[in-house]
Image (cartoon, rainbow, N blue to C red; front, side, top):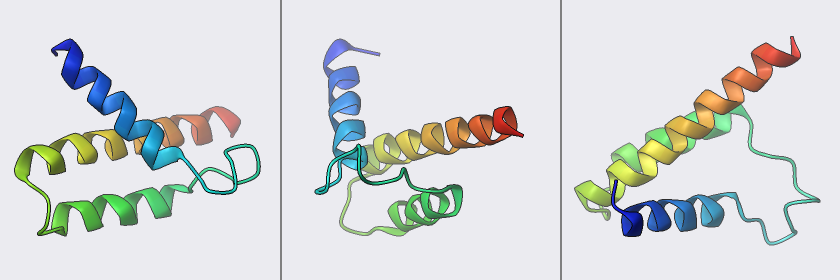
Length: 74
């Protein structure tokens, strides 16, 4: 993956995780919320195919990490 694409993904991930109240005060989104957001992105008509793919990949990564964290905590 080219460096510029990785930087764009990291920037997008930071944007998606950012909260107006601050990351320390807001709990991270739950698994159901992430899955709902992923479905919304996949249905979005205002995004290009490459944008959808990048955002969907980030949500899938977040979902996988959340599932792994839940298994670890159990």
